[in-house]
Image (cartoon, rainbow, N blue to C red; front, top):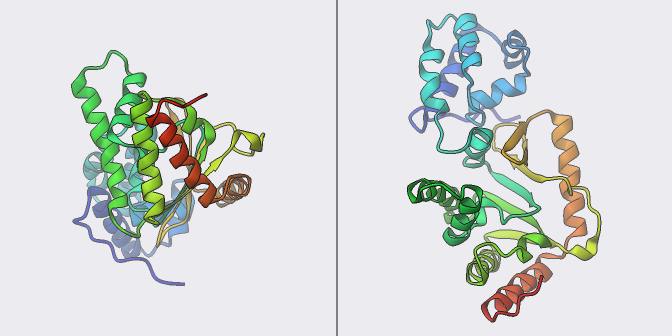
Length: 280
């Protein structure tokens, strides 16, 4: 089994805390499982904190200071590491997404954030917050587009998205916005930057009808699954839970159109939007 990845403490506050936690744990002669036991948490969680794939919460920071006798170091530095431009329910997932090696996502209603265009994101946020000022909407849109810049790298992360047909047919922002959004996804697929599939209405019932699903894997930490609902989100690292949702995703891909068929549908519907021929 390969050793832990060498962290760059200067890359982010989370990486700094993770590197220090690993150093202090080794110094105390504790394994990840042993340190986790003090917090009634798994050794897997300790590994994720050390790798920077999970956020260090204030209650954990205080316990680490107590157990490792670090004179308040983790509590003092935890605040900077937990600041985020994203909503509380999504912040930890967004931070994990930014360092994931693989992202597999199912979207039941909206085009996934990583794949959204500026105009589509603006229409979504305006619907969420109809009375917000333009400055607030601008800030939300920029944060979402920043996530999408992960795809500027030609190979990493590996992204595989499965979209319900509803995401293509729900007219967000009007026909021109939808045409641009679908063209953008088709372009990413044609450039072999992402794999994308569509679950057609004709597939009937499928195993993820109740909500969105995102699986993330990392070079040096266990896989995570993020489950999202209305202004709620849950990040899970329990191996059995992750395995169950991984099987769900595999079933989704089996029920979906092939990548080639899905690409043709994206391009066909984009053309329909452009020529005013879209029908719900």
